Image (cartoon, rainbow, N blue to C red; front, top):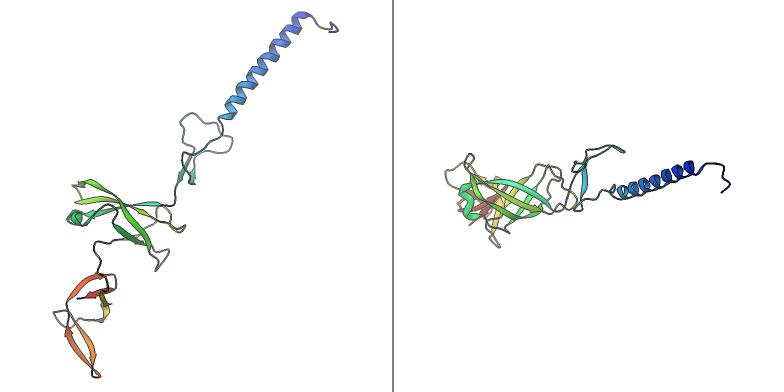
Length: 193
């Protein structure tokens, strides 16, 4: 307005201003793409980039996982195929939580038998209850049958001195050997039929 500079210098400065404003607008649009969101809820288990590091499209930034429910993949012998079914009840025991059972069920059964191992891949869905983590080792038990009101006893009560299954029972104040028929057994208990 006071004509201190020439019109030519003014026009160049105005062009620079408009260019800078366009660059700012482009940078603001790119800034909107700097927020990274995961496609599902989970917990970050591995960070693959550092703060303020330049990244490219489709570059892995984080590895994250869902902790509840967890998936447990096991190999079951081929001969047990007839005893497997989708939705079947199972449970897990882990060393980190002794004496605690974690409920599970069969989510998927592979339609293919692994020819090298003779096993079938079975995927279980496990309720982690905030206590299990991916990568833990577990003992897995598949429930194939149940006997309601079964008579059970500790395995250590069996007499190992005979060829048949026997147990000593108290009868009139004396220990008497009795032959018994055993049913299912699980860890340290056995069913008496």
